[in-house]
Amino acid sequence: MVTAISSTSATTSTTALDQSGSTTASLKSSIAKLESQITSKEEELASAETDDQKSELSDALTDLRASLAKLEAQMAQMEAAENAAEKPKAEQAKPTLLSGESDKIGTTNYDEETPFGERYAYV
Image (tube, rainbow, N blue to C red; front, side, top):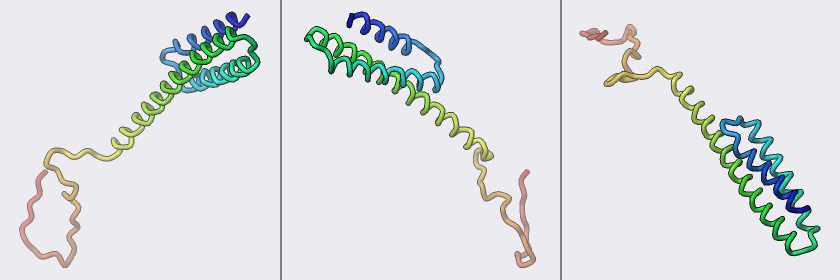
């Protein structure tokens, strides 16, 4: 009976890991499912009577924890990619300067006290 439960949870965790291109919401739900499975396995392990049951449940817990770690790593990668995608948008808001161009060009306002003289403008 313990074997049947362990194989079902292992299949569920494998299915959760095989979802390529999954969204953040589906990853969060998969993580929540795995955490609940881990909790139930820990409860089963505490109530296990034989050493065989304990070893099978420990193996299943190890698999579930590895799956959880993998999903959390995927979640972190997706969040990092989303943050990286937002940065270029903010940087593109600034006008890009051409080679040799300074941000000081065209910023001088001449007033009545500016000395008279030759000035050159390049267009």
